[in-house]
Every structure is written in structure tokens, then in C-alpha cells.
Length: 383
Image (tube, rainbow, N blue to C red; front, side, top):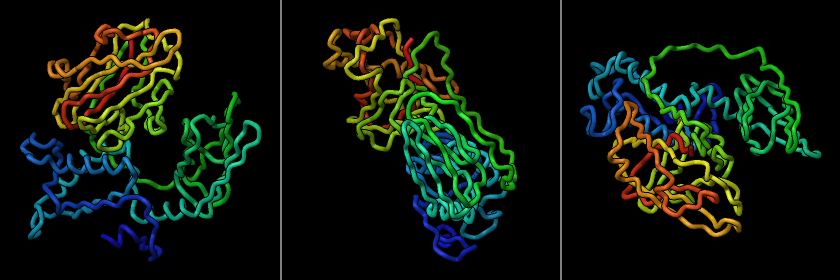
């Protein structure tokens, strides 16, 4: 296994591995298709698929390499957990769909080739007026190379096929060795053009797997102002909410806050807090047309932990000074009925935030957790 992790046998030399390696195998636990948190489904420590999912999610916050060793069968092998091929297939059918949003699947050799090519590549940037030209030099061919650029840059053109979103450009499919030229508008508006993706694509084998149903709540507000629906991990990693204003936790949480799938994951203790701005600083941001604050939360371990929702406002006219108006939602959380998907949909009348100046709001925050734990947040909006 160490050889497989750190070497590509096609070259028989060290491969640069920049992220964390993690190995697991069917020798480590009872493998099947069950997905249960600790204390449920007859699993005091959680089912095997549930535990592997937790490991992958934690590793995905930083980037890593996850290697899973599967024997054809361990049903009659002395000293190993008994499991059949059907057990292993059920495990894969449960786990794989849950991590496709944070994973890239490849062989060890293929991943080594990608890393070698990425490390050998070079990037040069030149800016003339309001046009930035990015030159990517590739000594080796590479597949789906991801580039990060300033979120304010607007993609204009590329000499190869790309997928472009604010802050991220992916060079699609196999990009041959050579030079790639990308252009971006740093300000103003221009027409966007792009070349089609290269015609040659790697041969792949598609395996159909039954995906477990994990529905996400779908709010249907009328004329809302969406603060964040946590649908864009790239935007969130750039510390922006859906309003394009700052969001963060000042490193008070116990694990790095991330957007996973389509929701925010907060790992907290009693000193943690998270906040998001509702408008520009030193500006009277008018929210007086709204009457309610809505959010959906879910507890991954089914342990409901209360907290305060806090609205911050400023003084009308001067738009300065910060005053906090807090509402404890613990009793509301404990009395709310979760849907079959585990989500609690909370609606808070803005009158609950006594004294808040709705004509001059600056931020909302989640704070005052009564104990340590985790909570997922799917959306926050005013209506």
C-alpha cells in the first residue's frame, strides 16, 4: 500500500503527493450498504459507510488522496471480517454517490500522471488596460486542470475548451502538451467567446449505481432576498455570500467551515460564531420591506443544540456603530418537526429581534451555542 500511494509503478519513481493520503480496506470493519450514525441502526459506533463518509468529508476540506482496498471476498479468509462481493458492492453503491461532489475518481497511476503534469506546468499573467492574459505552459498533457483566478475577473476566451465560473476555470478533458492562452476582462463588459472542447476524450467505463435518496429542502419564498443558499462552494471559499458580501467565522469554529453538497457545515463549541454581511460597510442597508427571517438547519448526529440568531444594525443617517439584537431559537428548534430528510425549517418574525433598525441592517450571525456539536445550514433568506 505505501508503494501504491507514493509511487507510480509505470515510472518506478517517487510521485509528488501534495495532499493527505488516507487508506482504508474491507479488513477494517463490517462492510455493507448500511448508512447509520452512531447509536442508530444497531451500530453503537456508526456503520462502516457512515464512518468512511465522515473521513472523506473531513479530508475534502483540505484536499487529499483516499485509497480503498477491496478484496474480491473475505468470506472464508481467516482473521478478516467476513464479507462477500455483494456486501462490497452495496457499500460502494451507498458511499460513492454521497461523495461525488467532493471527489475525483481515478487509478493510482492516473492520479500520479496528473500530479506530475500539474507540478511541471507553469503560469504567466500579463495585464494590459483592463484585459488580463493568462499563459499556461504544459510540458506534459493533462486532464481537467483547475485554475483559480480573482473572482472579479470575467472570462473572455480560451484556446482550449473550458468551464468558467467566477474565480475558477477548468481546462476540460485532455489538454495536450503545449501552451494555452486565456483572456479575462478585469473591469467593464465584453462579449464572451470560447472554443469547443478537444474532440479526443479518454475512454471510460460507466458503472450505474443506485443512489440513496437524500433530498434537500426547497424553499419557495415570494420576493425574497436570499442571503445564501450555499450552492456555490467556490464562492463560499472566497468568503462571499449570495449577496456578494463577506461571510466568515473568524476561526472560532472547531473545524474549517465548508460548503458541502448544497449546504453549510458548522462544527462548533460554546465560543464559536458565524456571520454574514447584509450589505456594504458604512451603508444603511434597508430591509424594512421584509417581515421574516427564514433558515433551514439539520443536525448530522441528530443531536439538536440550541443557539442565538443575531441581527446587527447601525444608526440611521450616519450608518455607523453596531448594535446586536439576539433571539434564542433553542425552544423553537426543540419543538420543530423535522421532515423525512432531517431538515428543520425555521421562520423567525423580525419583530422577535426587539429594537432592530430594519432600515439599517449590517449583518446576521449564529452564536451562543449551548454545547459543542455540528449543524448544517441549507439556506438563509428574508421575505
